[in-house]
Image (cartoon, rainbow, N blue to C red):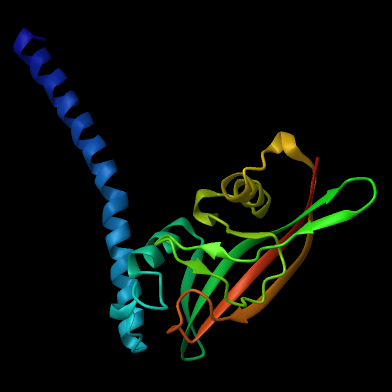
Length: 194
């Protein structure tokens, strides 16, 4: 094999590798754009005024819906001729036992990304709810731990026990008020902290 053939072979392999890397980086973005297009198609078909999202009482945007869908936290589905949003959540009930009394920490309100305080009655009796990132192969158990860390700065060393409880399916209207039905698939966990 001549020197020129070797150089061309190495350059060709490098170019192929570079194109492979570039292609693999662009592939998720292409898929995400296709997902957004599909979501917008469904919203348009069902006459959902998503252009108003992100303003007033509707804090969430289409891009947030796409990101949540991309992570597997939610799924926009058409059932029986209507649009529904399936939301997958790990609910954590945090308790502390001081030897005399068992305390249950409950959510009073939360702060939205824009800094506003939200204290809506959301039919929520837990300490926190964390969406499960199913496409990242996250389990409800892992989402519960992630929620404890992100929301309350309670780390694994602070936890005495974390156990799974009931699973429920409830309908609500919390995040995207124009979508007719939001179906929450909740896996409850009980957590005792030290």
